[in-house]
Amino acid sequence: MKKILRLLKRRNNGGFTLIEVIISCALLAILILAVMGMVTPVMSVVMSNEKNANALMIAEAVEAHIDRNIKNSVYCAIFTNAQYSDLSSSTGLVATHKAMEEMINFIKEGSNGKIYDLKCIGIKWTEDTRTHQRKYMLTNIKPKITVSGDTITDIKFEASANETKIFEECFYDNLYPDVKFEVLKYYEYPSTMTEAEIEADKAASPPYTKAVKARNVALKTTIDVYSDPAMTSRAAEGVGYADFINIRTPAINRDDIYKLYSPDGDSTSAVPPIAHAIENATQVRDDTEFTTEFPDTVTQHPETYVIYVTRKLKYYEAPTPSP
Image (tube, rainbow, N blue to C red):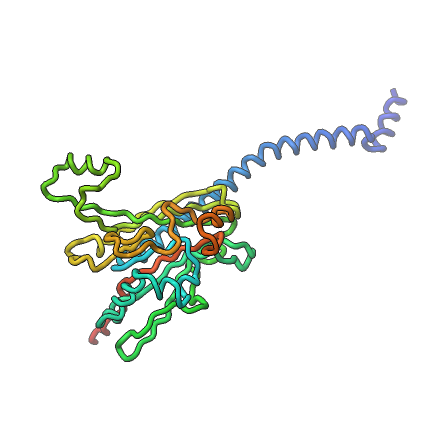
């Protein structure tokens, strides 16, 4: 008995054997792999949910900014599949397009320059200076307005854009937004037509043939936010509607002076199609599609510009109360 105790004591002093250490490490590795197998999917879901939540936040913020700024305007033109040079060039949209001509003439007329402003929101393909990736970002672009006395003599977009990014670049981290627009029309029918006749005309092919008047009154904005630079994996979508009350309401727009222009021309077809417009066009196309549809006219990542005329904001200081 004493001999056995001496052997056990000698073994205890010697520590673990190599086989025991190997078995212990193997069991620990199996345990760690099992835990990681449970944690990794959970972390993946959490990160995916966070990215989707950020994507939805971007979609909502972009839609809200556009809607808030343009809904009270009296003129609005959407230029799709464009480049900034289309605005700044001496032969570009500002110089040649009837929509721009009408908006600028309205600002110059009488005292309108004191009341109204010409503004521009750009959805520009630009560089994130932190990651050096290019993506669509929202910018406010300020035109150069020349004034002589109380009269506006010239309005133009300079070659180097005077722009401010609406959101910080970190707002777009690992996300890539794309914005599309669709102008919505309101069709007026003769008062002699019944509801059934009107509905039948709307459902006919082609529709709205019996309408006596059609006006652009609202703008549908669709924001797709992608999680990859190639913009193929959509993480979120946002849709908003801007109702142009100053353009839609007959009591305000009695003579149809105020207008919402669209890529297919305005409601009266008096304005030719806006530059490089395609119905239901997406912002991103591959080189083959562009070579076929727009040879030497647009880039692979065309930009969109929303130019609008709205009332100036005026701030008044509250009078100091008498003691």
